[in-house]
Image (cartoon, rainbow, N blue to C red; front, side, top):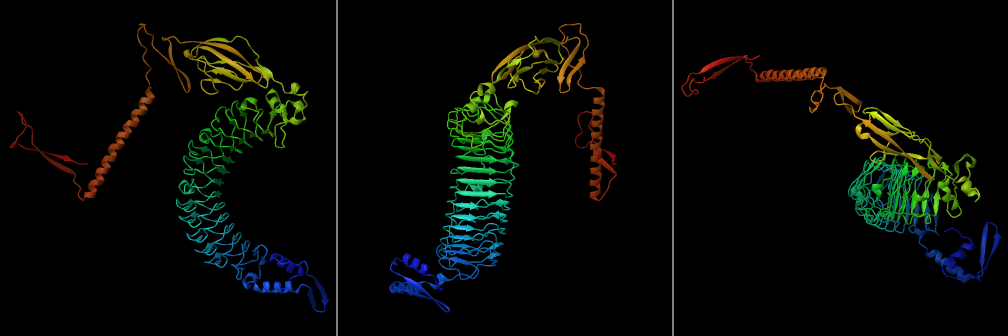
Length: 637
């Protein structure tokens, strides 16, 4: 044992319960060294006896490693080791072998380290771990094999690790998890298998992981959710699936995970659809679906999640949050939708969510956020509206009035319009400015001229409806049957607000209503359309995808005679159809003769004629026994 300073001996004595207050030492320098003179010889003698009682194994330390007795730690990191060093102290609790050049871990290479709690084998070149490699590490709780070259883990590698709590297998080249790979790690709580080349997880791979609470799979080659394998994880509370290439989340994808509380689906650029029952059976409190390709809020998939408190749909191309569709998420407290394409949040979007307290919709395309969106703005605590092109008008007045109480998370919203307050933060507005800037002007239809139109059936008609107001009003049309009209179809609303009725029909007759509306109010105007049918003795018209088709009809002298339908085919069509049928018939006959020819060739004998005997029918009644027979010969081609 090397010589220790006096202070170190004092610490050792104190740790053993000795009093050293009376001990004094004088250091006298002499030629060739130092001499210790101690006045407390009893304590000195006890210290020497205690040092001699230490096990020699506890004092050893491999040449390239650093040992720290105080913490029972051995650091052999980045020492260019090609194998597990010999002579490791038996009392070591933490062993760091990361950053070396080891390629294989043999059987029972750590058998003498029964006190080891933490083992780090990360950042080596390990491609093979033999069965029973960790046998003897009965107290091991943390095992890191991150960033190596493992392709497969043989069954039995983790034998003897009954107390293991955390296992990190990330950043390897593992292709498959075989049945019963983890059967010996019965107390494992966290498994990280991210950044591997996984293509398959066997159905019974996770048998034995009854205590696992957290499982991470990042950037694998899985083509489907390993539902059967995951169903073995009855205690799982957190599941993270990152950078997968699955486009559809199927029904019952996480069947049996009744204790799962947090599900994170991150960076699936190909994920577009969540089936309606994909999350059924889960009791999630946190759901993260970010950096995917989901274009709509998956309302039907979420409706079962009555315990959900935190929902993150950020970085998806979602354009709208519709009204009255999230009401079943009774416990929802936070919604994050950052970096999307949000253009609108409809009134009543969070209706019924009495616990809702945080909304983060920063970095979108929102121009406003109306108070009617929320069940109660009194519950709202945090609102992120920054990095949106906000129009500062009466619709945002409720936000500005609460700018002292609302938490903007340190990122103040700013105005994009009107121009005089462009880029001005909400906190910078004075109370006197609010009734001047944050105002709206009621929608008003500009041209109220009477539009009554009478047309003949088949004519196209357009009705104008232009309106003014601040903010710009929206235009809607109701049909004569009081149904809302859209921008598609024969009767449609154009982008400029006009109504177009193409190829009018008699049933289109009636009164149509145009309504212009904004946050300050609405205005409406009615137009009339009367469509006169064509005379029956003139032409018959019918509407097709190509427009109106007209067919001339013969004049009828009898008013009660029914008009016959025009012949559905012309001469050209009949000629083409007949020719095609005749060609098909000739092709069938030719195929039959070819078949008969080759069949006769396969028989080995070719007969060009066939003779058939027959009994002619009697002139009185049918030929009976003894009647004359006949014969004829048929030539085969």
